[in-house]
Image (cartoon, rainbow, N blue to C red):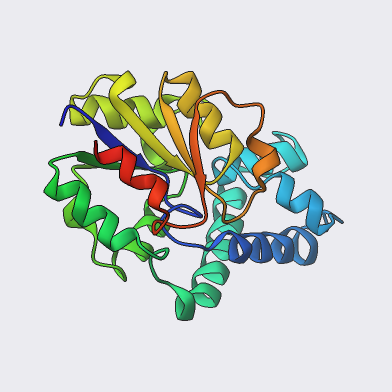
Length: 218
């Protein structure tokens, strides 16, 4: 098929966003004295780590070295806490196999660092399904900038309008919109209402067992 599936990772392939939030909440408040609520922390849960630091603290409070050190500490907290729960979202393994059988090209486009991408893919053996993986280190700006998805499409040599993005966040769906792509929403972390303003949503599903997804193979 002249079609590609582009997957965000966190919250889309694995249900881990609550663990990211908990790790950030601890680092931001206990280590950096940001005095943030859970809701405030949640509102910043998108993009690269350095972008989160800039949104919360401004550009000049911490050096690049300090941002990197605190980011690494946060990722290690997240990885340790989430490891016992690390598995694909229900139905995804079968969905990937079906897409492969239908010769649909697939890629991962994520704001996660290679450190976290490798952590996930080293524990769930699905690398074989993805012809390209684009991480935070491969793009200049994060979602809603469309670069992560346009780079995936370029690497797969598929036109943007023939790509379907799988996302769990409004910013990610907005990035797909900015790339001229439709999106399937996984309702793992955000509510249906948070996507109501985005015209490129094809469907909203809880997991990959939803029969609505069968239409993507026709």
